[in-house]
Length: 485
Image 1 (cartoon, rainbow, N blue to C red):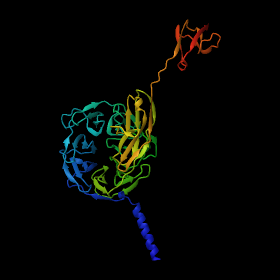
Image 2: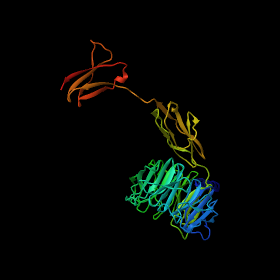
Image 3: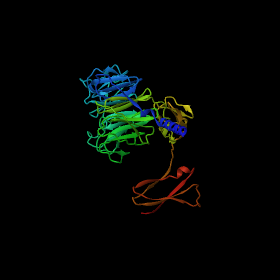
Image 4: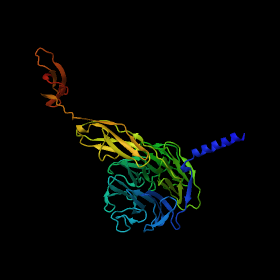
């Protein structure tokens, strides 16, 4: 009997190993001695960079061994961003670095001589420009982080990110006089569409908006609502809203610990990760339940949580403590959420084809016409302006990520000449209220039947009746008869 029992135990153990994932096991690593409380972590240019109180900046290539760097300031960094190949450390002012080691203040946001009032809250990059938000609600743009231009917007943005040719930000709703939390979307940062989340509390400057794996996500304090509609209430919870297209195409909520104040979703391989207090939550399917892994620690020195993926591992900050996952390999394949649609248009018009896709970053796009690549058509949208007959054809897009390429459905663009028609008209004169019968023949025949076109009552002393059927006939002849007043 011992042999069957032995084999049964082995089978159960093997089954358990198959069920385990790289994210079930995390290890804690110490931060450098003397470093302040850590609040935020990002990855870029092959290195992890974490920042926190008293100007703390620490870097690592593997997520385990960390080195203290000098940012040249003692301000508390509340958020780090990696934008357009550069690191940004933000806390009222902004500092920038290309390598995480050498830092300089962003020009125009020094402690003295500010050309713009308000504190720096967030930065993103899109359409060839940097976009910065301030606590005053101002939106600034710069091509080089040196020369800045202020723009007036109808919303006061606290955070901002760019993806899918769209800007998505969190509105400072309380300062705008509306206590409900909202997100806002824009294609050009001039006209904005607000997405009301129906929350009793605002998103706040801590609620970062991210764009990862073709998905927008945002952290919103308050009760649980889904796609702007009421859900189950969690007065001290936090909404985690996932948006595919910036317009509420898909929403999922994740309830976080009471008192949670900061964080963002991280994505790598097939996994999505969210840090929360003393635990990490992960999933491979945003429509499925999340798995939680508790990571015990003592002596928390920060109230913030954050996470990022890089060099095949996740790094999570939990209350100032640094945790690293086991290596994560593989990637999630491309999944097309919205296919490009066929369109019919007249010459001279404009056609916009678009596709929405999910999958492990980086995701690239290459549009094709009749299976031939279109030069510089590498965004998720394709715009054809002033179309001609030569613009007609079958368009598709090849979407590629580390898992390989996937080709979209074909969208047929049909182009017509502008539809111009000329109509025959009969001019009628008389007194207001006079009635006329207008009749027609397609060929003059004195003995032939006349067909009624219309009975017309003059509303002015002179009026013109148009025969809208005349454009379909080579010839048409008319007569008008006064029939009374």
